[in-house]
Length: 424
Ligand SMILES: Nc1ncnc2c1ncn2[C@@H]1O[C@H](COP(=O)(O)OP(=O)(O)OP(=O)(O)O)[C@@H](O)[C@H]1O
Ligand SMILES: [Mg+2]
Image 1 (cartoon, helix red, strand yellow):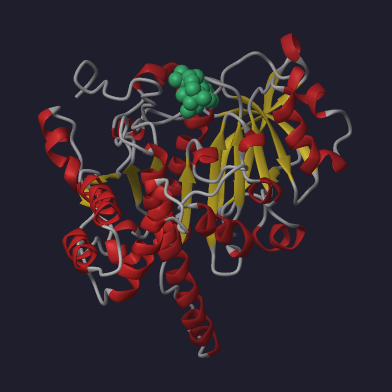
Image 2 (cartoon, rainbow, N blue to C red):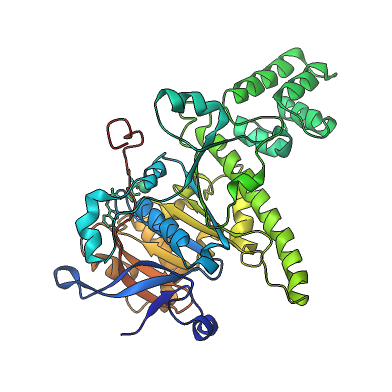
């Protein structure tokens, strides 16, 4: 049986074979619909950085598949996992459940020679929300904050849904230009108060916005050290599911993602330089782990029709991430809503069932060249089972039907705060 390793080029296949440094994501589906059965394992390369798209309509298994990938990154052989740090951006507040074994699917797992297993992860929440989590008895491991001084005028303007060339925007740019070093919201407000040449109501309007930003619970003068988010062989789940009901919910989430992505890329770029020097000296250690960032509902952070505070950073990841070694996995129900550059940079696509014409068209445009049949034919032929998907592999220019493997850890799915009613 030929071994399937998507995302691995010929050269690496010769060097590493088909199994070393791979993630076992599922099994190849052979035959169509009713006749379909599972054949050989489908693995995905994790030796190199990748841009992966996970698509499919509602409830078909996208978030579940992201969890499978995270499990695999953690469970890879030590020399590989030790050089990887995985971060899930959890917009729905569902990945805390990975801390518990998937007892519900114990039988299914045994068919795959696997057993339910709890995953060791750190659930990180915005500091200002810790109390609410405690009140609701939802356990978390770490809190985080962002430094206001790390945010640009454009970031604030996007989060505040405000034009930079409006009087408030002009005041904002001036104030940030004047402030130096690390500063918090308080210092920004003071600076606004002291600004000359601006109408009182302009100042008041901007101060109101910053006061409201204080309630997001994510800002503090000194911010969280980046090291907290990257841990060799570790999984951090950043819960950004809160902020609902506040003005610009997704903008605030995007601020978190944008800043984190920017910093992590900078860090990897700096490490890469050091690693190159060390390599010439015969040392082969990595300065900082390669980061895999897994983003659910990715079209909200990197949409095709407007810019968010995360757009620039995420576009840098997909465009230049290969060199410094950062990988991005983006899941969305609607691939056509994802920024076209992000879509076209995907080297691996795992697509569960899709029915909307626009979404199928978007995928066709980037991968159709090497498909034997029309994309819709591949999708239609998938068995109607959760977790069935087609894999499009840019490296081998092949398409595979795959059943994603069952999860070892529990998938809370659409039950965000099930902990109280569910298991403890
Ligand atoms: N590979 C799989 N094996 C077995 N069951 C699966 C698999 N994938 C998904 N499921 C089942 O399908 C349900 C829905 O999956 P999931 O929550 O991942 O959907 P989704 O595509 O993320 O949906 P939404 O668009 O609403 O976020 C899961 O709770 C699980 O029960
Ligand atoms: Mg989902």
